[in-house]
Image 1 (cartoon, helix red, strand yellow):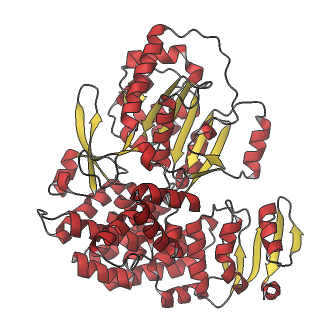
Image 2 (image 1 turned 90 degrees about the vertical axis):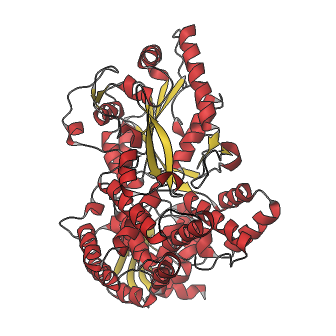
Image 3 (image 1 turned 135 degrees about the horizontal axis):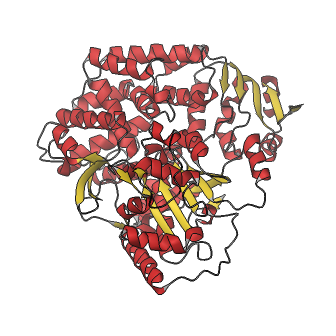
Amino acid sequence: MYQATKSEFVLKGTKPLNIGCFISEATRSLIFRHKTRICSECQYVTEYNSLPGERVLLNERYTQPLILQRHRDLQEREEELRSSGEDFHSVILQGNSGNGKTLTVQKIMMDWASDKLFKERVDIVFHLKCKEINRIPGRKSLVEILSYSCSLTPDQILQILKQLPEKVLFIIDGFDELKLTQDIYYMSPHTDVIQKAPAEVTLCALLKGHILPESFLLVTTRSTATDTLSNLLKGPQRFTEIMGFSQKGVEEYFQKFFQDEQLFRRAYTFVKANENLFTACSIPVICWIICTTIKERFRVGADVTSGLETTTSIYVDFVSTLLKHHCQGLSQPVPVLLRSLGQLAERGMLEQQVLLDENTVYETVSDPVANPFLCKFLFKRRICQETMFSFMHLSFQEFFTALYCVILDEEESKRKFSQLISVQDSRWLSHPPRFAAVVQFAFGLLNKDVRNTLRKTLGLFVHPNTQALLKEWILKELQSNIYHDRTLFILHCLYELHEEDFVIKAMRSWNRISAYGSFLRRTDCWALLYCSQCCQSIEELDLLSCKGLTFEKLMMILPELPKFKKLTYPGEEKVNCFFLIIKWPLSNITGKKYDTYILDNQSYKHLQ
């Protein structure tokens, strides 16, 4: 495990450089100016629902997430052995939406600018956001692209890069948000920092190591885009996974959020007693939503945790709370407002845009500046600044897209979901599957209790026939599920629906649950536990090559393990210890690559 507060995982494994290069006073002055600007920009964090001018000090809110080095498969391990002796110059920091990648990058930038990080390895750090690169027009060189994101001019950046090419760290945030065209696969050799090309082509030349191959790279991405990134990124590479908060991290975040010791203890005690909510809090953005919701419920004297069962129900409750208590005097009715937000969200998803230009937003949303779910900021152009908008977090853009699709009239709603889930037009199954989260939210919005909340508190009606379409689709998926990487997605869809009778029906057609090679999170185990509770027995649970499988996560699913006639899991020491501690006898089967242990359900009797 690597501690994100230290952030040394970025260049861990590299050797300090003993380069006797001369850094001119002019260059030192530019770097100092760059650091001063970063300290000014990064010392505060603006929370998602902050009013204009409201800010919180980063160090007063930032909570260290778990960051683990990802387990390698055989091919990755062989590549590492072949490159033995070489330094790691590329690091992938992957993680699901809301797990804290961007805030971790902000912390790294702040620590470097404050001279707390990378003193021997790095003299200059540049931070590029892929969602902003999407907005850069025309053909641009690397130094021009970098000038969009900092206070230095292209000539000043060129001066620094010429003197310190091997002591530069580029942090590229949100690779999954980058709009990639076919140009990146057919680009001509691009090796100069002043050579111009479309912005995404120039960036990919940097990733490939065609430009500044001596430099260091840290790239954040959702896990769904890791394969695409890995194929582009120069080697040797180090893979790390940001897992969100540990149990201790959740407690620390609550303490920092509530500040008042009595409120903190009261809120944390409520959530700790609710295993579902406590598990959800491992995702930082969900933890913030839950803290915000609880704080509001304390204020009005409402039941603290009722109605917060699924991720979707948490988002619905948060939206309802924000509209009810903090949005008096809206210029349009709530249903109209939410429909317009959904239309804007869907447009951005289809166009692969997280940043939305002012004209597009005003065409769709009335008074976007006063809208609590949109963030306004200035995007730097070469000679001017442009007003841009985004949703408070990408997950909210996905949520509002799903909401828009379920509240349309019956035929239009069915048409949109048919496009999402059909084999011919399954955009969400592309690489990366951009619409997977939208589909999961849609299942959650079709839950009976959630539909009642939408109708009673927000005035939104969801047609039941849309539910029938998605149910029919997922039953077909279960009957033909041969893709290991879609197992967790299906489990989460069923969990978000949270309709026991249907989940029982669905689980009858699922003979074998295979999470082969997946990275198991606490939330994944919770979804697996729920779905397992809805069946009498099932043939096999395959956890072979699962990454992130810990003692704690195995304990989460332990009550349902006897329902599986066969359990396959990786023969790792920590996993073996789990079964030794609970006194579950093992039969060992050795494969070509793995030591695999298979347990039949009769063995469970030894636990009684």
